[in-house]
Structure formats: C-alpha cells, structure tokens
Image 1 (tube, rainbow, N blue to C red):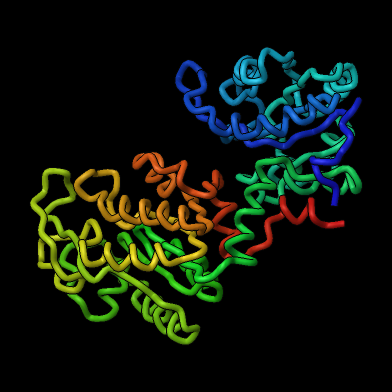
Image 2: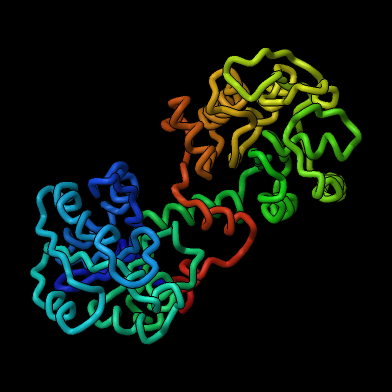
Length: 398
C-alpha cells in the first residue's frame, strides 16, 4: 500500500479529500476551524514535497445545486493564512475543462480549492463517472477525511479505482485508523470501554460488538435507568426507554456469557428537577423516588468506575456518565476523565471519541492527558460496530 510518507509528490497534482465542513456564522465567517487545522499536516506534506494540493470537500447540505452560502470560497482566505500565506486559488467547480485547466497550470506549492462536491448529485450517489471527472484533475488521491469515511461517496471511496497505484491515507485518517485499531484489533489488556449517553437504543450495535472485545464495560448516563427498570428497580422520573427493557436484559446475558465485567452505577445523584437549581440527594440507583430523576453517578459508583479504569491497559470512552453540561451533575464524567488521565500516565492507551465525550475532555481541560482524541462522529461509531468503512477499504484494497 502506498503511503504519504514515501510518495514522491514532486511536480504532482494531489487531490486531497478533506473534511472542511466547518460552521459558518450569518456573515459566512468560520466560527470553528478545528477541521481545517487537522488537515494542515497533509496539505503541507504535499507542498513541501514539491507538489500542488487540490483541496476537495463538502460544506453543509445543499439541496439543489450551487448555493453561495455553501461555497468553499468562504474558506479560501483562511486556508491561505493557515498555510502561512500560500497562494490558494478558487475553482469555479470541482469538475469540467476550466477546472482541469486551472489544475494543470498550478505551480508547485500553489493550492487549488475545488468547489463544494455536493453541488453535484453524483457525489452522494457515489456516481462512477462523476468520480472519474474529479480524478482527471489530479495525479494522485489522498483520503484525509475520516469524518466521511463511512460514506461510499464519489470523492471518499469510488474515486480510488482511478488511482490504483497512487492512492493513500492522509496523516489525519492514518492516525485515526491506527488509534482505533489499538482498541479494536490488538489492544493491551485489560481493555475497558466506557459507554455513556442518554439512550441504549443508539448504542446497541456498538455495545454488542464491544462485548466480543472488552474485559470491562462501564455503562453510564441516562441509559443506566433502562437497565435498572429492566431489573425491577424504581427509577422515579429518570429517562427510560420502555421498548428496550428486553434489549437491556439481553445485553446483560451476553456479557455474562462472554465473561465481560459489566459495571453500572449502584448509587446516583438524584434531582427533583432537570435544573442546576434543583434539590439533590444521593440514592441507590434502583430506589429513586417518584418526582426525582437520576442525573449523575454517585460517590460509590464513581469509586468503582475509577478503580476499574485505573487498572486498565487500554481505554475507550464514548459518552458522558451524567448531565455534564450542568456543573452540579458533572462530577461523574469529570472523575471518569481524570481516572483515564491517571491510567494513561501509567502507560495505558486511551482513546476518546464522540461529540459529548470530546466536549467533556475540553470542559475539564484534560485533552493533553489522553492518548488520542478522535474527531469523527458517525465513522467512529461504525468502526466500533465492526463495520467496514468504504473510505478506509478503498485505500487499503490493492
């Protein structure tokens, strides 16, 4: 397999699929450039190697062709600044003779931003002819958009067939896949996964797949109460999914069969309202009174979580164990985060992924203590479910 590390970019036009789907305000100004920053090492590698990067991405969800508010031209000046003043030209489209001409005239070190791929229906349909038209603009293809790797779109997967010997991962997607494989394929043991969030229903395939891999599975957050209810406990007004009580019982059964240590809160911080100003008390997880709801793990549960985490060699965290957005109910998630940092200090490999978990890491200022923080959403979850990601398979296939 070709790699970005040893490829000769000299004089080459490199098509780089990035994820520049960044948020813009009403003045069409970028409000968070995290995704752009993440792609810089790959873009700079091409420039430093004497090549010309052709940047391609989607932005937003255009419905009927070109719309100015979804144009990638709004990102050109900022990309130039991030690249230290490099020349970044804007193409009128992502395919066509004019674009091909602009690409051909690029000097080494110059960058061409192609227009929003999703202005064409062929992108999301995975149309082969559309992929072929894009491919005509470049000499090689680099996939550096892990956030869209679970989509079999023209630019994320189908285009690979036109570069059988000139396709590779960018630095971002390479690090994502390598880090996930440390959890999914060859983890040091014991391996502990912490799955949080409000609903069991959204995490069933991941939990079921993880039960074939992990030694310990900590389930926290709102989904706890569906399990408590399934076992006949009193959960008061806590969030619960009555349609998934049997699912919860089956997950517990599967954990026993596979010898997985399944850990859930034994005590919780209950509140008489979903509010920062609510009255609170610590109660047993299965004895929450009417009118009260569990909003965070209690001290006994936190101590148990910490003990398991700090004795782990590989840790995956996806989802908070309480309503961390309110400081009053952030204690459980903060303790989990700090325990992960402690384990990492002792040599464990830790991976945090999923929007809310990353938000926790940022809120508690512990990012520097985590081995790897995944930027992906859907792609991360599908990888954890054991699915093949088209954007990864397209590069790996010979």
